[in-house]
Image (cartoon, rainbow, N blue to C red; front, side):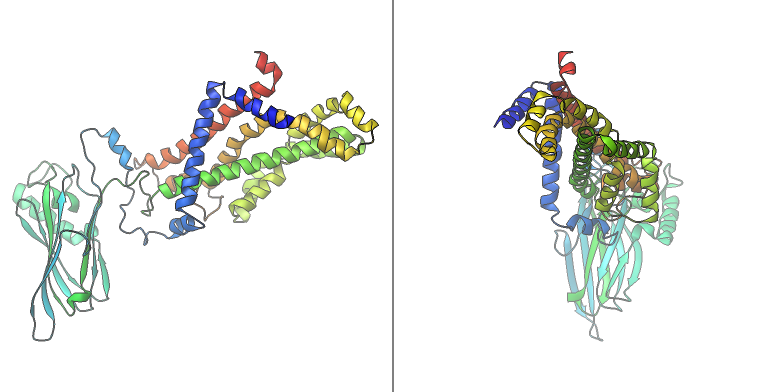
Length: 460
């Protein structure tokens, strides 16, 4: 009962510090994100999505900015991805007649309204049908202009036509543009030619665009087209070089970071507490052995050893956590705990416990450790960000868990793909922001707790 009152008193006093309130609000925000991530990505769903590769996300734009990036482009609406398929509006197929050999001639129209201020990032056409089907593709502008794109012949039941990567088409469209308006003042990519006005200065032509398909098919029921006009923004976090939504790693990385940091901090601190109290209480040869081991651990280059182990062995996150705990349990905390234990074992209530026959282990675990534990809570809280950053640093070096989508893995991918060089700042800013947010929340709470449990700081 007394312990619960003490805990409640500390919490009430904690709420009196504005910095602690800010830290608690930030921590609550992180916990809400963690709960949400676990709810929408149960089990290993997030890992499956993250490891699926580009094929799963083929209809997402590559390296797309997050939608909130529009806040930095006032007055301009950045394009979103538009998809036209048999299940959406704007898709109309007409079967004209049966040919002599039993095939069909079709006219297909895929229409969409484009009202954005920039050209799309790419255009792809996904075709399903019967081998031998052939099609002619045309592009129709809102102003009525119509241009021929290409001919397609299916050799398999499905074909992906990456229109934006068609070098021959790009060359032909560029030459046609030069003939009509002369040399333009912009670099004429396929996207700019297909979505721009017929002028030397680039300007997006807004309105209703159409992809017209005229073709011969063996079975119209098996024939379908899927037009994807890729935008430049996507979701709350954008996408990476494999078209994966970064929100998967940003959201799912939150519970991973909190679990890793809290588990490492609590276990290491508690183990150091127990070892330090045992060393200080029993003294003698046991104390000497523990102190010499601690001093050896303190001069061992911890990070270098962790990196060395990670290089030789591809470790999962929790094996890595175990190694970090093993390499940290004889840390400097043992010496500070031992110093407190040497003082506490001389207190009257400990002498009284010995007098009525309490065993040494009962004195250690019932009388001494609970006395010291509250003073260690601030250091436990303050050490959480350090372990979160350690995991991120190892992942950034390519030494973390290769399967889990974590903040460090996002930073590692951003570094390997030259995100900053390409101007994809969001790719680095988002995981960095989450790391900083985690650090600030635990630091503010830890400093406030330190002032509460440390009488000297409380008086200042």
